[in-house]
Amino acid sequence: MYRTLLFLVVAVLGFSPLGHLDAAPSPSATPQGLPNLEEASRQVDNASFAKYRQIAADYAAAVRTRPDDAALAMARCRFIQNFSWSDELRWAEQAQKDLEACRQDLGARFADEPEVALYLLQSVYGKAAIAQGTPLLPKAARWPAKDRASLHAALSNAYQSTQDTRNAGLQAVEAARLAPDTPVLMSAVRYLATSGQKDEAKRLLMNAPVPKTPWVANAYINTAHDLLPGTTARDVLLRMEKAGLKVDPHVSARALLQAGDATGAQRALASAPSRGANETPQNRALRLQVGLAAGDAKATEAALQASLDHEKGNLWPLSQSYGVLLTIEPSAVFRPAFIPLLLTLAASVLLVILLPGILMFPAHYVGTVRARKGRTTLPLFDGIGLRHAWYALAVLCAITGIVPTLIAGQSTLRFGNNMALLEPKLAIAHVVTLCVIVLALCVSIWRFGRRQWLGIGKWKVTWFIWPVILVSLIALIGWAASRHVSTGAQVPQWAEVIARGAAQLGGIGLALLLLAVAVPIVEEFVFRGCLLGGLTRHMSFFASNLWQAVIFATAHVDARRFVFYVLIGLTAGWLAKKTRGLAAPILLHAAVNTIFVVLVLSH
Image (tube, rainbow, N blue to C red; front, side):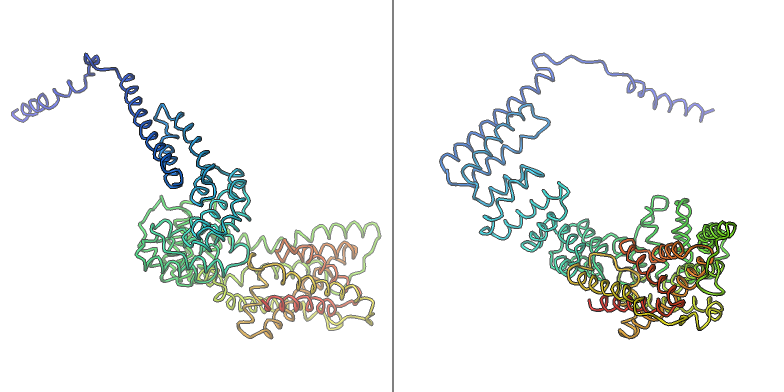
């Protein structure tokens, strides 16, 4: 009873004041003798405007007494500028008019002064800034380096606003060369890197002063990671850390991973705060890459599980990572949580195997129609039909996708775009891939027969006029391109990587043996021997040759050189028909690949 009474007393004492607090205060009138809110604001504005007028007049008087003082005249305009764009002042419009008059007077009297010209340039944007700033370039040759750098930086920003990335980049490079701490440094590095001048881009970035804020340091490292090769990003990271800047752990991990330091990347990620469901997809993908590169099955499985929980529609890329995980931890195939990835991986392999059969279906249909009409076709090679074409193409596609992933998938993640470390691994993977393809096709190769490999009948010189012209054109175009087009601006093709990797392992001889001997033999047997041979059993040679050439070009996954590969495929197919063998197509293919290897390794 006493406790109940105590609670009642506390309730009365505690809650009774709340009633007064909740009650709305009664509106009180403005005290007698004081202006209302609107009038008070007007008086404050009038007072501030009067003070502005007084100080502006003092500046004007000082300028009249010192007419040759450009710094004083510019200070007057800057004072007025502080009030010209205010949203809170009622007299801001008058300040804008004063600023316009001040700038006109400043330009009329001191237009040749670098500081004044740069100040006036800040007041215009886009095309107007380009029109005003470009005529200053000849005069700027006599300016101090820092002022010239500011002019180039302003023009770079102006060009960038008009989507003229080339001129924006050129102006940024000039600014960076004059002043390494220019605000357009990243634009300069990006332009140089994307135009093939990566050494110069690296030099600019490494010579730039260390920034004062971590977010700028992160931007430096990310730019180096995305655009510059090798260990540049890690080198920039070490500079920032030595200067005492706290770099974002994920940025550090990317830079270290690119340099091949998977263990260091793991340590960097360990210092990152755990975000759980709030972790970004990019950071989850980074954790997955680091785990795979380090060969840490436990960390990889945790990252895969997190990605599966938050990215339900991202199964295909995750299944590729799962395939690499299986090379590290084969028992992961039995994890129930990864069944969707296992099924996706199996379905993709099955699709690759079945796709050549789908491509063969039109040929089978055409052959059936021709047979019913009594239009017989002459097969190019004995004992080769559509099933051989299907099998050979399926073996090539499946093994080319699977074996490099199993052998070099982890290395690809570990070394990133550090091609000096990655290329030999990929070259070894390519050698193993070719060996597995030959092993899978050994029965078909044996049954193909020696005569069909070498050709039947006597070769005619006229058959080789066009192939020689084609090879000569390829050599000439390749030579011209290597002299006038920078290869650094483009992502290297798979064959370029293999050529450099083989050269690292065994010199140019191994590169030629791999790409100019082994590759032509395997590819000619698949595309001209099996594919063209199988198609000609059901279709005319013209249609068969065109069909196999298109498939041959598509299989190289190089849109820029698609027409080139089609021409090679058509010519090789035509030689196969004329000689009734694969020796001539192999020689053509070998000549083209020899030119390619020599051009690649000469850079």
